[in-house]
Image (cartoon, rainbow, N blue to C red; front, side, top):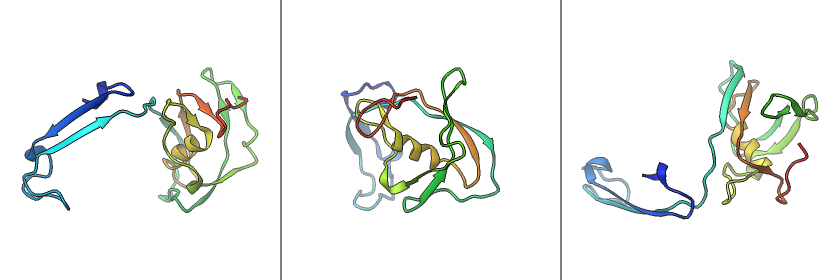
Length: 145
C-alpha cells in the first residue's frame, strides 16, 4: 500500500463497496460503488514526534484565522541549545500565512513546521517536538542554527 511507496511512484487502489461507502454511498458516490484511485506520491517526510512537557487546562487550539505568540528554544540532537532568541521574546505569526505540509523534496519551511507543531498544542501548554527532516527559510536557506 501507500506506506511502501516512494516519491514519484504511482499506484492504483481499487476498494470494494464493503470497504468503501457500502450500501449508503456518500454525496456524488452512489451506493455499492467500487472506488478506483490512482495515487502519486509527490512528497514524503518523516514523522514529527511530540512530547508534552506541561499540560494545560485549556482545550483551545489555534485556528487558521488566529495570530499566535510562542516562546521557542531550538536544541540539537544532543539537547544542546542552538537558539534561544525567542525564549523570552515571543515569536508572533498568523496561522493563515503558512501551510502544514513539507516541500516536494521533503524539506520543511520554518514557518510551516512551526504551524504544524503549534496546531497540535493547547493554549498555555508546553511541548517538545523532534523534527528529523531538513528545515529551511522561505528562500530555501538553512537556518543559522
